[in-house]
Length: 424
Image (cartoon, rainbow, N blue to C red):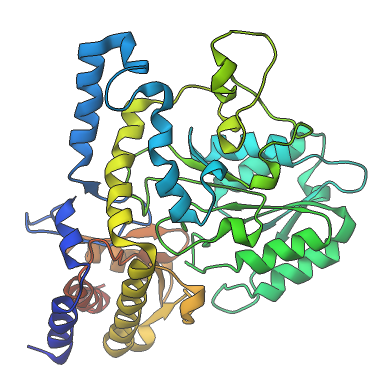
């Protein structure tokens, strides 16, 4: 055994989270042997208990039909509340501040409808340059809805380092420069292309100092890094559950609305019957009376069959705890970085920040030599049974997610990466 093999075996033997791997179905590689799955930042693998959760809903439907809304172990009328406590722990919120509903960008539009209220010269929205396309699409369409243009009312903050990273100062300086023209900040908790963790608390405080709203897309944050949304004072946030949370393709998403906004009568929203207070919902009156908290932003009854797998995935997070997951994530990341430096040398650039506070599970890599060499390297890596993903123009993303990744997986993946570099 090489030293790294021995190190990986030692680290795996000491890993108290190792048994969690057995709670997931992991894919096989092209040769039929188990693949090395490093793509939870795009779609998490299936928790084995997910099938039973879906089958439970199907049985309830088959035996109770319409009465399943009010009867059974988990009546559908309040099914989404199964997840409230777990989601609150996952994002650092009060239970009334979170809800599982809709999909990520639909939730973003619903919350922007409430929180983006341009008035006079205060009409600008700040995002990061190179943001995930759906975020920019949503923001641009909201600006157009309010008869604003992206040229006049959209601020895009560019990274300030050769590796494409931002400093917290970059965002704070842009917020302060916009001043009283700034209506809303929308930034990621973790930037999707480079895996950088942003300082949510500092950015929120800066936005509030100039009178702007602070919102966050946490698609790459939830289940990846610890969050403290309530204490950070975030106004709203949205996220998906199909990535690190492993709730299935197109899984029902999540949203956060800070408690200080949860009962405001002066905050407009795009209302729907399912957001109406349950105490009077079935009186079928014409006036909308929102449920206090994030629940009040619901518009339609949730797809129960798509919600069911979330119960299986959140149970794993409840058992593991984000602090323990974070500690293992840091160790996996450090191990991977050292192996990349030892085996790949100057042929690979690591785009994700090195400081632990600025990184999560994801490592973004660039092959030195250009896009075509990088693409060939990625394809050869995948043909050897390492499942990561490619983001244009030239980024290979791998995510050693601590729920199911072993140190031996990282050791093998970086060995195959070094081989792929030579063969490409």
